[in-house]
Image (cartoon, rainbow, N blue to C red; front, side, top):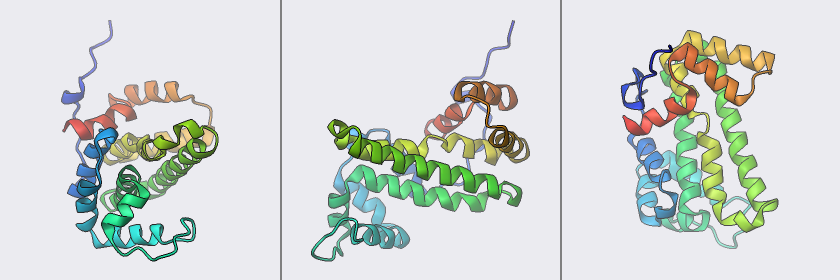
Length: 202
């Protein structure tokens, strides 16, 4: 008989020192239908770096605006609060690299790049292939961005083991997603989806 696996609340994981802005953005993203402009605007305004990046994005040639946008709230309205929350999460995810040992840096960078690529692909598919779902592009972008966040949690808690495991899987490129989660459970006591959920439960 297999021993019972720990419930989410009993997982013995340490959470990296997440900026409050990131924590709040992730909580808001758990309820995308209730996301509103003002709460996201307040989050953005707390971080001058995020403000600068947001205005850079909204004023890029991609949006083709006739007038320069200098208001954070206007930028949030134009981009959509869900998309902006995703931008906040993406920027703060990159800052998490400072909490990891140097040996984990290359693995973390690959994970971050993969998450960003998945996010942009999800948005592209919703805009072009599934236009009837174009209203969900912000949700799709954010889901892609966060789908492997639990792996970052596992690298933070088990740097040597996690880096070795993910690098091996990357090189072999043979394990299906379901098998990967099973192997994670055997190695760490939880899989990366559970580790990601732990952030919200803690």
